[in-house]
Amino acid sequence: MSVELDIETVEKSRAVALGQIEFARQYTLELLDNTPQELWFQMPAGLPTHVAWQVGHLAYSQYGLLVFRQRGREPEDLELVPGTFRKKYGRGTTPDADPAGQPTPDELLQRLSTIHQRSIEVVTESSPQRLLEPIDMPYAVYPNKLGAILFCPLHEHIHAGQIGLLRRMLGLNPVR
Image (cartoon, rainbow, N blue to C red; front, side, top):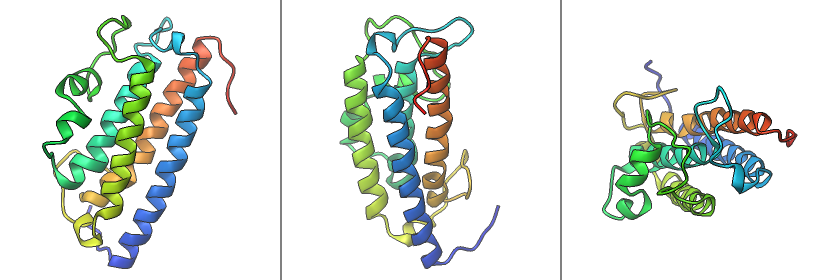
């Protein structure tokens, strides 16, 4: 898809995306705040995932879309997203129902928050011209850095829906 975007449109699109990213994150946190942590590693019958994996995946994906896709990998990223974290929660990984050797729910929430803060900084600091730079596949919306930003809240809502389904399958009431 080839679409010409002017600087004003890029700036407005970024502002809208940042608002949607915040809305999606607040909804995800509302779901998590209302999910007892002792249920985070339970995998209901017929569902090949659990809440802890969803949280780890959201953290890793936000890093990928809003940090790595925007400016590449930097040395401090190894602390932000260690290789072991990527291997547990990256695309195509398989959730493990055994909490042994995995981050605790509190550790996952902390990493989710830290990556979110850093991601917002990177997106906010990027110039509109930089947001128009192309990226390689896979991409969504536009084949540029702005497209990765626009996809982030859509991706989070997909996984918030999965968390909502997990909650219902675990016997919890909907939050809304």
